[in-house]
Amino acid sequence: MLDIKFIRENPEVVKASQVKRKAEVDLVDEVIALDEERRTLILDVETKKAERNSVSKEIGHSKDPQERQQKIAAMRELGDLIDSLDKRLKVVETELKDKLSAIPNIPDEDVPLGESDKDNVVLRTVGEQKQFDFEPKPHWELGPDLGILDFEAGVKISGSRFYVLKGAGARLQRALITWMLDLHLKQGYYEFYPPWMVKEEVMYGAGELPQFADNLYRDHLEDFWWVPTAEVPLTGIYMNEIIDEKDLPLNLMSYTACFRREKMSAGKDVRGMKRGHQFDKVEMYKYCLPQNAEIELDKMVADAEATCAGLGLTYRVLKQCTGDLGFKAHKTYDLEVWAPGAQEWLEVSSCSNVGEFQARRSNIKYRPEEGGALRFVNTLNGSGLGLPRTFIAVLENNQQADGSVVVPEVLRPYMGNLEVIRP
RNA sequence: GGAGGGAUGGCCGAGCGGCUCAAGGCGCCUGUCUUGAAAACAGGUAUAGGGAAACCUAUCGUGGGUUCGAAUCCCACUUCCUCCGCCA
View 1 (spheres, rainbow, N blue to C red):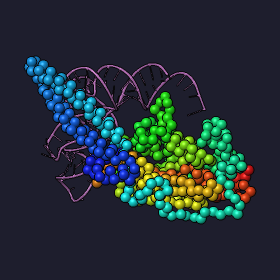
View 2 (cartoon, chains in turn yellow, purple):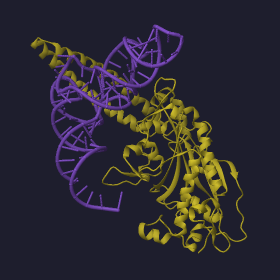
View 3 (cartoon, rainbow, N blue to C red):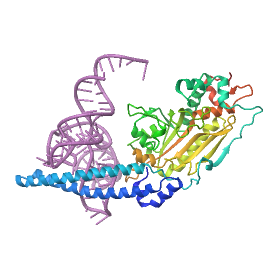
View 4 (spheres, rainbow, N blue to C red):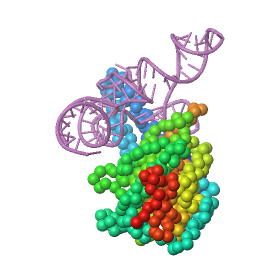
């Protein structure tokens, strides 16, 4: 959510942002008009409330019964008027909030212009695309051949876009999760294990609702929404809280499963385990001062890169263009790893600075050390990393001619020193 | 799932229809005193919105209602605690 004052004072900036994002430009004028009406109503209704309060006090002190009755009658009438104005105000405020919530974050000036993810800018590529002296298999062949990945079983019990990891496969995934968490622990992140279902207001606060309701799973009897990312509960934990400036930045991390309907990508990436309805992810998250957001984002990208590098994966860092930039994001870097079997770059991390967009929705502020008014914190989130795609890359990059897969050295201690996964 | 009791400012806690738009205490900040500190004393100390400002309005778990007027009365919900039941 953007600051209504900012929109009021800089309508052209917001409109330009809407154009860049191919979002609705008229929304800006609608919001400004509603804000105007809202403020006029507030002025009116509050003047009347002030009058009612003072006259009511007079009634309490008044001894003359006739004067009392007269004033009570007048205030009854004024009260009715206040009621109707309050009702109108509420309608206007709800509408304003709805429209305001529908405006995406303003991209950083540094974000390149572009239409789609094809226009994202590659900043650097680390490592070489591995060459094989045999035809490398894609993971959807490699995994089943090794007996560690079972698509049929997933479909049987849950339907399409589900799979089952078995034996060394299940163990490899668990090793990846634990190793990643341990790595981020060394990088200075504090671990949380949050609920995987949250209330609607938390989904709203994190910027998922109402925009992305289509992509979320929910319980149909109670107010439970399955998290699409740990970013959601990690934002919710500090909802309505005030953080002391000296405690910033807060570097948090969490492992959760993530649940997404993937309606938008129906028919896309159906093969293999690249895009499922349920996937695991280790997430990094930061609360920081606005002036430090940029540098904290750089650190987070470096921390995610260290994860790819630690596994010996070839990866590249991209800067998202305006056409690909998420609704909430002010600026985003993507990390992609090379999958030699599937012959494609796989997005394993997306590190974003969302500015105060989520903090405003979730009401998360900090108390400045020099005093003065409370201010909204900035929040950052980044995967470190998404599990299935990392799993794919590990499998495909470390395969050998005989169909076995060498376990990356850093993971061996987490797998009972297993060196090679064989059929 | 059943029964009962709570939810008040950074924290503790009083209030139970107008004299409290929140007493008192703790903590914190400033000042006096002091070489400095402590103590003592004095003053200050919530958030949001509107307004050029003076100032006004809202907020006592949340949402409704009664009333000229609600922290206070009524209804619903949320949540915490105690006990019982069930349970990994």
